[in-house]
Amino acid sequence: MILENKKVVIMGVRNKWSIAFGAVKSASEQGAKVICTTSEANFEKVKQLLEEIPDSKLYICNDVSKDEDIEKCLEQIKKENGKIDGILHAIAHANTDDLRNDFINTSREGYAHAQDVSSYSLVAIVRMAKEKDMLNEGASIIAYTYFGSEKVVEGYNIMGVAKAALEASVRYLSVDLGKIRCRINAISAGPIKTLSAKGIKDFGTILDVVEKRAPLHRNVTTKEVGDVTAFLFSDLSSAITGEIIHVDNGFSSVGV
Image (cartoon, rainbow, N blue to C red; front, side, top):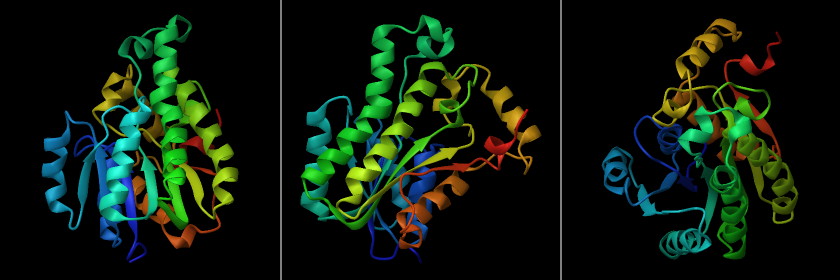
């Protein structure tokens, strides 16, 4: 098992369909002790899900746009678990109107909200983990992103801009984290039918297009994304940092 004796924190677990929960299962299957975070509203639901995950723990991180909420969560995790070997950032949010309306109509407040929650929170989490000396040497940070950061995907709008900022943050953070022998990468997953995806206009059409045009002619699963997450957490990926790795059955490589 490639994650034996490793402790990893997976932030943003919401329900059994979430990509983050796929990562929870893959990391656990590979021997990791999995430490999860979710909101207070989802705590009991996620707690039930984790009953099937051995040696797992769950903590509340209510609002990643508030430094005090992040700090409280990380302090509790370190106090009860010691240093960790990885963090997965699976957190994103945008206002529904800012997803459904034309991008040009994005509100100033909506723009700031999507960037704060979906992008800046990664910077804040990594900085606090470093300041609190939570990261073992060789620790791996992972963020989830999507192809809408690179090309226009109808209905993705402000989230595409936020994910582009997230990916740039990964590259810059790789330099800072390299100074302490830690790594950071992002996984650009193909579209997956999750509850969050329901907020994207005509999401079913996106799934159909990917199935038709991707070289492997199918959509990716949460398990496949979770397995790549486990690989990036592991020492098998020790020379990989600052990268955006596409897990989308090749869709991103296909031209017009």
